[in-house]
Image 1 (cartoon, rainbow, N blue to C red):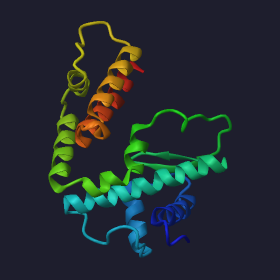
Image 2 (image 1 turned 30 degrees about the horizontal axis):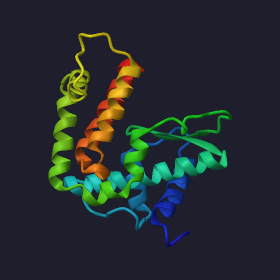
Image 3 (image 1 turned 30 degrees about the vertical axis):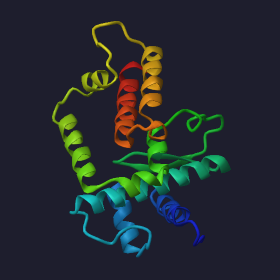
Length: 196
């Protein structure tokens, strides 16, 4: 155990739990298992509070991405990370999954998001999620955010060019907003599903 890096310690605990669940395990059950084992790396509070829920989720996914990177570097296993199922899989030689840009990985490995996200931000994220789940047109919203017309012929190269322009324009290092950049990254993830 490494006291200087709590995320690594949580990653080790998660690795143990995942080895015990070869068929995979949900995020909720991982949290329950960690609480049952008295892990000191996640809040031991009720998940009814939205900010506690967000912070618990963020800490868990941060550690999962740390673990995934470590397993990939060791070429010992592949970690499939999803909200409904997290599963440890056999190492696949030649896999370049981590070489590709992964906005979710970038988000969860940046602890600034954990520190800066307020209860109001969590409310907005949840409202956005439920709007999409209730049939909101995520593709249309993403195209609108990118200021692209869905009627014109679009391809992934055009969308990526627009993405890079928006990231450059709205990056916090250049005076932009972190929340705006998160929205741009989410929109890119959505558009990649439709045009990738």
